Image 1 (cartoon, one colour):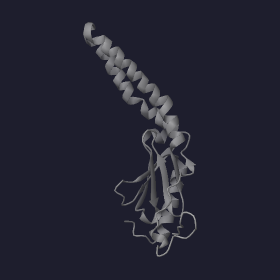
Image 2: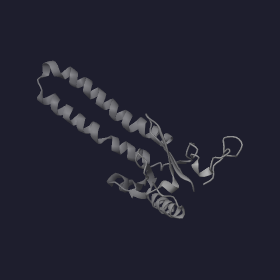
Image 3: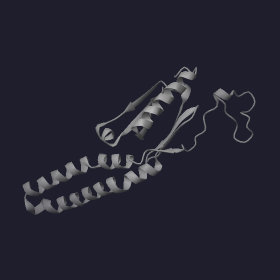
Length: 183
């Protein structure tokens, strides 16, 4: 791995290039646009179950003190459903990025709390792909890159299933060329 100082191209006297951290930079690739539908559909069940419970409560509870509270909770639940299906998936799509280079796996995720992660290739221990039922229906997958990091694995969610398989293959091949100890 080669690294350079911030301006001169030289890491500095007495600093081995392997000891320098990888630069934190925005990853170049977006997830698949179908991820928006995955996130939309994933956001529906909890508010719908809550709405169903509220409708049942409307008919079962006495009318006097509870109906005003139920109307307020129904309005809040409908807002939650609308924001979770119409606003948040678009934000997530615009913000989620990933990139794999010969040196590292870069990810940026989160719409409310943003997380930027770098997993150096020599530290990669395993590469996995995951296809949940909804992801399978949309032909999407998640690639999980596990390292010895205390922060846990780096996940790239919302990739095209074929692109995810190719990425996992490429990462496995790339990590096999490095002589790191993966710890």
